[in-house]
Length: 112
Length: 115
Image (cartoon, rainbow over all chains, first blue to last red; front, side, top):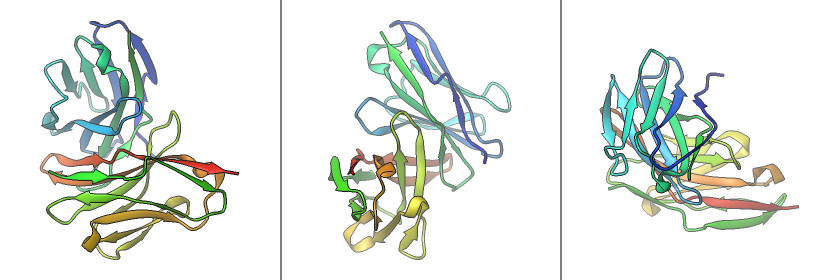
């Protein structure tokens, strides 16, 4: 069964460092997303991406965040200068038009 | 703006007992509703979804949910809970835009199963 894969599963970084989280969406999906879940809180939408551009982003997704689809398979989330409050589980998801979202297992980011 | 409320933060049931997890939504149009389950340290797995049609939807692992428009609810049920059902359950509503569908999640209900 096809699945969304994410790497790394856990990353620890120092405050102010750049972090790149990687995702491989399901191959025939066209829409890609990043969500995050701060420990003990609900899952929050960050950004959606379609046709090589951001289609929607939340207030959380400020200038410190960026997304990219550098090739035909990867979808990345970059945090330019991490803050303590960026510590969270980041989920990548993908879907076909109008279909259900399939989520990866998440990348846990710990900022020290 | 759409929102989802899950009134119960924690629920404890005995193994073999029935389960109902509550979900209320606020959305201006016909909602597309989902239930996801998250086991500790794991990702989000889709249990079931409601797009249209029959208001009682069946999902995986023996779960079902009923959409009640008059009550703005989409409660999740299971007739007999197993110990492995212990997890966190999230209800979500989708909005469809030209860029895909965006999910708004509830705060989740943590299910504990007593043996």
